[in-house]
Image 1 (tube, rainbow over the protein chains, first blue to last red):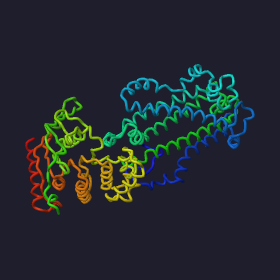
Image 2 (image 1 turned 90 degrees about the horizontal axis):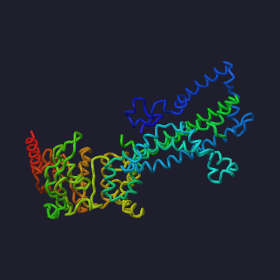
Image 3 (image 1 turned 180 degrees about the vertical axis):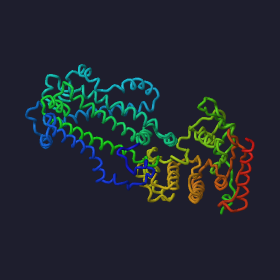
Image 4 (image 1 turned 60 degrees about the vertical axis):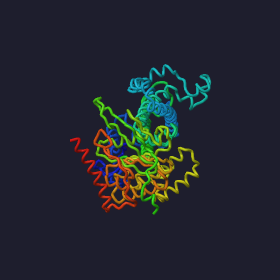
Length: 302
Length: 265
């Protein structure tokens, strides 16, 4: 599985034992290279401030927002920055988690059984290219304002449960949609690409299907599943921010960004953008690490 | 050395193939014959080597004997039984992709015990014994790709030992190794066969390997495979590669292979 950022030297990694790498692999080099383009963005930002337009907030105003994440914005109909981020992450965890929890078992079934595969294939290929954001208007109408709280405690009392009431089912659904397909397809492919000789070895040892699944199929396909999860997470992050901008939300980092724009409090918009970017980066770093750990044994296969 | 070690007693039959035919479909949809009526027997407690030129269907023979594939016609039995019914009695070893790369060496060796449901404590002590026997002590916690090729095949032999299978089907397991390591492992295999009363069906394209290991040699013709010759190799053990008799058996096989290749042209 290709890993990004890449490791090793620049010559298409012909020497896989070269762990020393170049200056680009050392911490200082990584930080310098990784911050080059963000630094350019800051320069562009600075140029924007210099131009005198009202849309671009000053550095100090944005840093002021970022430095006090628990403060409730005075002129803005929004919760604090930290609460907004927390709401976003709760929705993400739930929708993405449900997506993975359904896609992996179904993927195993479809990878193993031709019947299940032929049952799912047309549906999956029709549904997969539909951008979940496109579904949002329809899904919002279908689910209305129902949330975790309204399902659990009834629509009348739902408002009493602040956090749970803001986890809207419409959002969870489109996150599920965004996560399901990449994880499902990578699981199916991972299961299919298990080396036949490994399966034969297990058969000759008299292993049961469960033992084969646990000891061979799962570890063999895990790197690919992890890769699918990483793609799915990127998708979900995009979709969720877009969904939070959509009417019907009262919280979330995307909501904050959008609301601040409407009232011209651009320092909040910028702060939200920075938080979105950095959180997205951290999430991807975590998933990249998971992917690498899952595939540690693949050195032998190369 | 006792007499029976010097003169192999080729008594009971472990492997028996009768008129085995097998064809594969090519991409174009035409059937390509791989085996064309293969008939031979492999004695119990001995090593039977199958030699033959490339494309003679050596691997196909093994796969049919293992029960992983079915013959189109004819029968292949182990000890008179259908191989598919002999779960856990058959050990299969190939040149590559034998160990599971995501498991440590000791986990790999313990796998047959795990599958059987042996308690982890017992399994651990058995694995330790096997590692010591095979010269793997100290490598148990490594991953397969951290071992040399020779050590990897030792570990694979360890897994066969742990499985307590009696019928070992080996498909060029030592071909990719350097000569010294190959000779060590050949020697080890002969010892294991004597200790455990194993019946081995060993595929190789190396005439030297066949002469060194085999109690019986089966020479396959160029594809589609037929048995060109089958004979008992009665050279005394330990075999001396430099002796005149050894050279004569090598020459016999070489001439046979040359002649079957000549027929094709």
